[in-house]
Amino acid sequence: MSAADILKLAPFDASNARTYDALCHCGAVQYKVTLSPPLEQQKITECNCSICSRNGYLLVYPQREHVRITSGQEALKTYTFGPKRNLHQFCGRCGSAVFFDPQLPKQGQDVDIMGINIRMFKGIQAKDYRTIQVDGWNGWPFIDSDYLK
Image 1 (cartoon, rainbow, N blue to C red):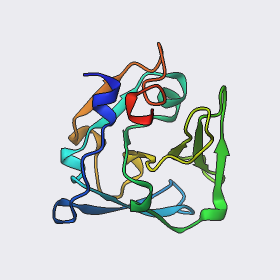
Image 2 (tube, rainbow, N blue to C red):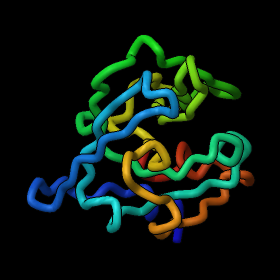
Image 3 (cartoon, rainbow, N blue to C red):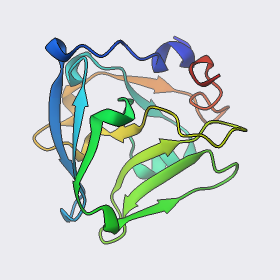
């Protein structure tokens, strides 16, 4: 499966959607994520690049409008590196890697999706969900995918 296939968004269907509560380890950052389809039907990616591996990311890609921070916006800190295409957001108190905010290459515009770490979802066990392995070590499957071009 190509990176473009992994990252294609299914059309949002409110009749097949579920909202998940999520929070960092210390609870300072809390947010809600609405996924359509629900988590058990999502393409959950596990990338082998250095930052994804170190942060323990297991990512889904909802539309930005379906991610709502309910408290702790001020606790969020940002880390970027290299071409600064992804704004990695983490809790400044406990260090939990909560999500990343991709930026369009060369245009600096916000993309209408976010990479959300399902490990922050309340009441789920990551081992219960199927993940798709992505080889980000040898390229930039997210940024270079046809989805963002």
